[in-house]
Length: 114
Image 1 (cartoon, rainbow, N blue to C red):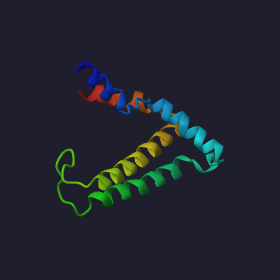
Image 2: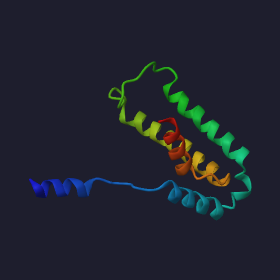
Image 3: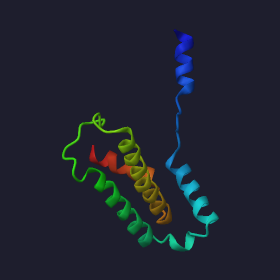
Image 4: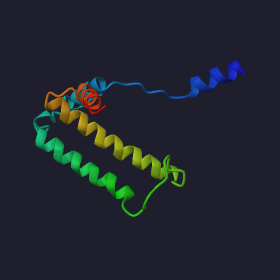
């Protein structure tokens, strides 16, 4: 039994990455493509809003959906994951360009609301 559990854990793909790590990867990605000149706060915000629109389209005509999306096709869930990722990555890049530590800001906001 213990050996089976070890195999299952080893087979799982675990991704544990910080917001700071993602920000660094996004900065490297932009620098390698010489995109930094386009990454103004305004441009990043508008790009993120576009991605939020694409995310909204996924839910537009579905009505209410159950937690965990049990009735969704796997391909629909993958599409959702892609759009959520796009929004997250633009948000991280925007916060980094603005000099905001998003993790710290979110923690502070959460603590203030308790």
